[in-house]
Length: 232
Ligand code: 13P
Image 1 (cartoon, rainbow, N blue to C red):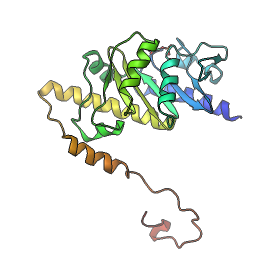
Image 2 (tube, rainbow, N blue to C red; image 1 turned 90 degrees about the vertical axis):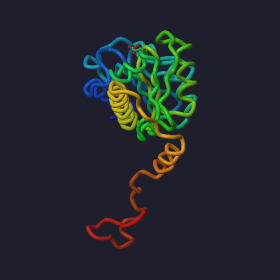
Image 3 (cartoon, rainbow, N blue to C red; image 1 turned 30 degrees about the vertical axis):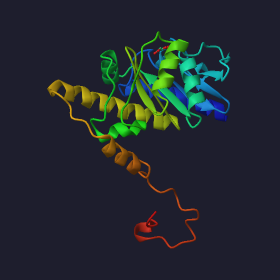
Image 4 (tube, rainbow, N blue to C red; image 1 turned 180 degrees about the vertical axis):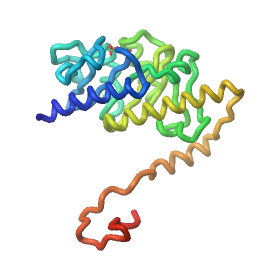
């Protein structure tokens, strides 16, 4: 199995998972993964359950598509995100119910919970409305994502980026969970917000919030209790 086929399979699996996990439904939404100097993206107007890996479309950074299917109508949005964020390896756009509820109310997600910092700042911003699939929409999203990894899209949905397909799906789930909790909190009354100093502290902690990588040579040093190396 070649590497491109594996990426096509992984992309389709992510699109299927996006719907199965309640982030999206039907043919809405689209997902892509960077591959060298191009990216693979889900096809336009096709139910993911009816797709096979060969339906994923390879799109060059100049917009030229290769394959038997038309790429997602949002290929430009994905392309422009890859251009703006050289570190991005995957982009996911969906219409998750809670994010879309806030987006239809033209509300962003403010720092009501510390996890809002997961998108890289003090809020998950709202990109202005423009017709789907247009350069104008791409521009709106570009502005909102200038220093963030996720944003809502007015009267439309949400979009996020991450290093990998696994990470972009996890980020989308986290943002949808925040949107759900924030919408519920709004129903009770005014929602108090964290200060920018408090959010800066969270972001500083996030910078180190991970397990250390595997030791360079596990055989060289004596393992600690339970066989695991200590510290990090
Ligand atoms: P595509 O089927 O062309 O990917 O469009 C779905 C969508 O959500 C447009 O914003």
